[in-house]
Amino acid sequence: MNITSEEELVAQLRAQDQRAITLLYRNYSAALYGVILRIVKQEEVAEDVLQESFVKIWSAFSSYDEQKGRLFTWMLNISRNLAIDKIRSKQYRVGSKTQPMENTVTSHMVSSDGIKPDHIGLQEMTEQLNPDQKVIIDLMYFNGFTQSEVAEELNIPLGTVKTRARMAIKFLSKLIK
Amino acid sequence: MNTQEYIDSGVLELYAAGGLTPAECEEVERMAAQYPDVHTALEECLRTMEAYALTHAKAPRPELEDQILRHLQTVSAQPIHQTAPTAKVVSLPHVETVHETERAGTAWWQIAAVILLLISAAANVYLYSNLQETRQELVSAQQTTRQYALQVNQLENRSLQSESLLGVLRNPKTLAVKLNGVTQHPDAQATVFWNQETKEVYFDGASLPAAPTGKQYQLWALAQGKPIDAGVVKTTDSTLLRMKSIEEAQAFAVTLEPEGGSVNPTLEEMYVMGNSSSK
Image 1 (cartoon, chains in turn brown, cyan):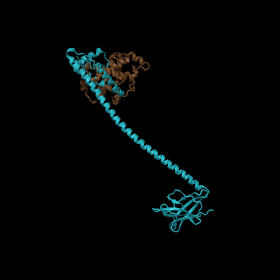
Image 2: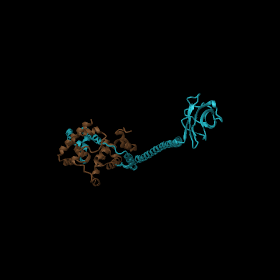
Image 3: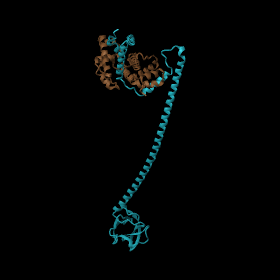
Image 4: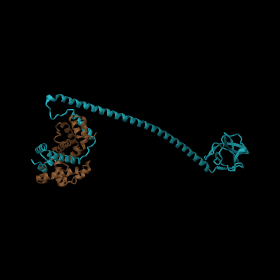
């Protein structure tokens, strides 16, 4: 039942087939939850954001365009954006005042932050990623920084941000092949 | 347009990692739509970031599935059509969609109800058989307890008996009379314990041969040359038997008699005899 291709799932979702929700949840909840948790750091908040994500995925599905990208990327972006909005919201900042702020450079150098991925092998391999390159990807992907914000944060030229991002993804791309 | 230069710039990677502003994103999407090699390179970057995201995968609490799916049910009861189609053309399909959603919702609840009912029925059967089993176990446990109580009672009685017998034997007034086998039965032996004060007589016939069926040993006291019935020996196992009290006796003897005993001893069937050389 879990083995449903993305195309089939998209077709079912378009037809507003209720069964598709369950499939969608079973296929993607762990992936989305992992990324959300990585961003918001607190399980309770991550659960809320996961629910908001599925609501948005379900209700805004008609705006999904297969031509622009895959379903998984689209869902990841919805979840990421909701999670990043959450950590930027005033309420969240007040609520987590006692928590150490995580968006400093050093905290990103430390890559093991208690999240246990299902894909241990790949996770370990990504450890081989050059820390200077990894931090750029992570700041953008998990903290929602733009390239210029990254440059500012790390005090490096914009061109370096681009080069390192490219090298990082090239390296990762080789790993997954 | 040199697409390779564009690809090499790293902008596609920034797009995939989410480091571009919305305006910059649109530019990348436009390029990808226009140039197939840009599209391919971008696709590659996006897949890589998907894989990277997956390395962080973590299953949420299992309870969350139900909660979120139920929440989605309530959301989809009033479907949000973000790209509202022009009213005239799609009004009919739209209505149908709503109906379908409702029907699907009903079916979902019906299935859930049936499943719950089945689970509940199965649980009832299981629990009922458990109950029966437990009841049977209780009954047998009660029986066992009763048996134990009975055994304890018996043991208590036997222990009391032994104690009182021991008292008899230890009593200095008790005379132990050894009865030896007569010529015909040289191996037979028995002992009579006779309390001189209370006149109680106890008999130990453990060393007598087993009485043949239909026959029983009988103890006699001989007083002034006359045999006095001292009772039938019920068993010849190791227990001491309480016999009839005897006032006076110069000797004790045991004969084999028909079951139930005789009024007078059958002297030919005498097994053991001994003198009570007292008084």
